[in-house]
Image (cartoon, rainbow, N blue to C red; front, side):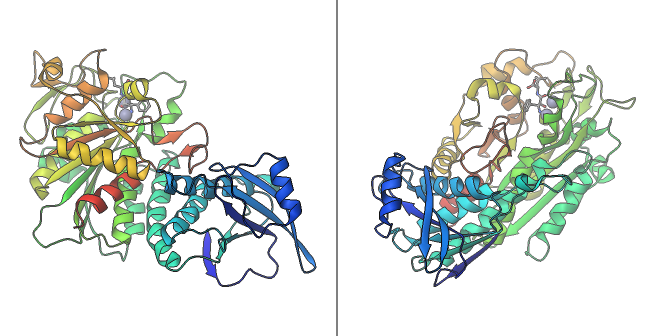
Length: 486
Ligand code: BES
Ligand code: ZN
Ligand code: ZN
């Protein structure tokens, strides 16, 4: 979407929007608009839209009033995004190319204005490249947003927020792409493209290199796939030289068929977004790198495709991870943890991070527990868990802490190897987290975010339509801003 700031309303504007706080219509409205809004019971609640028409000179333009709620609400910024998102949702396909957002008498701060713009841009995002036969009325026509009457500093505030939008949109794109297009190698290629010229360092390990390092756990997941596996690391040194980085680690299973423990057919298509954790890490890194975050950060993505074939991993196989620990694989569909085990070990050995946060669509049980409102967070460190919870509340990417402990860990003991890869029916999300913890060195603060319920949405939400949400990018961006950038 093309976004520009202007001093005056464009002459031929056909669609104009204004913001209204709860119970307070903009003073510039005509009598017809004012009475129309009242008749339509427009109250100015966040995201409520009333539209009518306005005559100016010899043209008539559509005029939309969108509610932003109370100016002193705790969720003010989220409400303003909701207002922006409501405008995009309503007007993106009406055949109009330009939306003029007139903030002249909205009384917003620069940051507040930027959040309205962010809401519009994020909600206007769509990925229609494979739809060649869309009817005109289905196509997104809204291409340009022109903001007039913006408060001082709004353009700079938007430049910052725009980097975040770039990151979120990149994550959504990766999550949306089907698995015949996005597989480990092409995931890497897309990241190389997107990070080119940003100053980030990219390191990629292929199958042979991972074999050499002894990553038998990650590689075992990809061994039934015709596609190669990859480990992708993106490093950004924006902080003090020599300061230990924050590591983000993502599960990037580009398709999870279940492997030999194959999943039922119904809903299997959802498993194209089993790389949503890695997608969040890629988009989060992009947002941070674009805004030149003053922190040292490393993003690591374990990229594999989980497929059944003659060479595939079998239930009962014992594999050896890079850490030296052996794993009895009892269910090849519990593959995310096998991927993360080696990715987590590698990042500790190679980068000695000060703290680690992993993101993974790890368990269906997480959706049973928390639905689609919160990601589950499991951590060995109260400070990190608290920082994540705070960043979640602030950014809107909410997380809820879950318990871990030795009694759950015991459920992973195996009679033939150091551990098995499943715990049993009870506490499935927790035993998955316990498995990961076995690959974290004592004393390293670590948090695991199970985002299975968050990366994809079956219905439109706050700033997204049906489909990829971009969950995690804002959490990553806010965590770094609040805890690592002095
Ligand atoms: N990718 C799935 C988890 C998942 C399921 C994410 C549904 C999003 C929606 C994961 O690899 C998996 O299959 N987990 C199993 C674990 C079980 C075999 C212990 C599960 O959740 O059923
Ligand atoms: Zn699986
Ligand atoms: Zn999976």
